[in-house]
Image 1 (cartoon, rainbow, N blue to C red):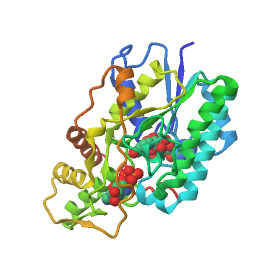
Image 2 (tube, rainbow, N blue to C red):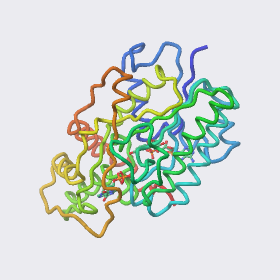
Image 3 (cartoon, protein in one colour):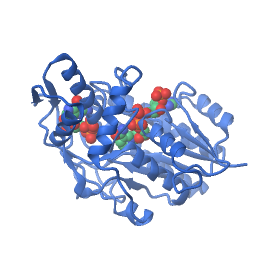
Image 4 (cartoon, helix red, strand yellow):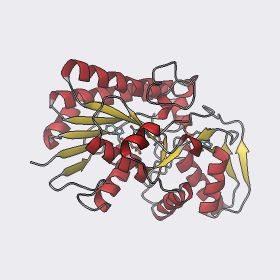
Length: 328
Ligand code: NAP
Ligand code: GDP
């Protein structure tokens, strides 16, 4: 019997990126499907992973040998500030159910997804894989951050007590097709793509929240997908790996907004709303470990990836998540 890879949260931004790569790379190649392998991309409608019984049922149905665990309550800065308890509790429940059921059903490997949001607010830069627990996270997203940090603790505990092969990936900000484009709860790139589209359509100003000065690193979901597939195939250590472009690839929110204006073809008035929060000023992360272990990686240029994402949004406006709050 071939391997069965269950991707929890398989219908979201990152899950759809993995599905795209698995279905388009040549079979048997480094990032392609292996002969005999079966991939399952699960959504919350198949099993609400906050519920232990539904989680067990999902695992009984597919009998996964490997799990890429992406399912989570995910949102941008404004959603995280609004619903800290939901981000904490729902993600704690989801992670506990997925990891414990994986242990109970002898899953051979689990790769869970963290985020550079989980890092301490006050820490020396660049972030690397050793600094997750060195101080409290930024107050704007402490619910999400603590739930995700605990996954790293759980991975170590399951390994030490039971010998489980559990590990985690730490992506920086992700964007691409199938993102959540909610105007208020989405991350900055999908939220601004949607806002810029509406500004152009309705002949209104394009308003960008905050000062435009904070810096972020962005990774295209289809690049990230390849790195997850590499971890699945080739990485077997409990310590996490940061999945990111280089630390010298930080861009300001203004640069992001400028690129979106260009990609959308918006020519109207464009301004900042300083009454909205800036969040963490920067959180540059090093991809040194990733590149060393992978032997290099060809990232998609930011503007090309952004153009593809904008095109996907325009082509799929009627079915995209344009009004789905991340958390209540
Ligand atoms: P997303 O597009 O919002 O997708 C979330 C996925 O989780 C969806 O498939 C959703 O299923 C599923 N899900 C949510 N609640 C669930 C529940 N109770 N039970 C089962 N499934 C549930 O998010 P994403 O951006 O792909 O995020 C994937 C992973 O990457 C997450 O762990 C996130 O923390 C991490 N990450 C994301 C970013 C980013 O910038 N987006 C950055 C760093 C890390 P339905 O759609 O069917 O409800
Ligand atoms: P973060 O990296 O976790 O803070 O996540 P975001 O993707 O939400 O990025 C937040 C940064 O983008 C902050 O500096 C915000 O001020 C800025 N920003 C500007 N406009 C928006 C917007 O419409 N939505 C979001 N989420 N952020 C915005």
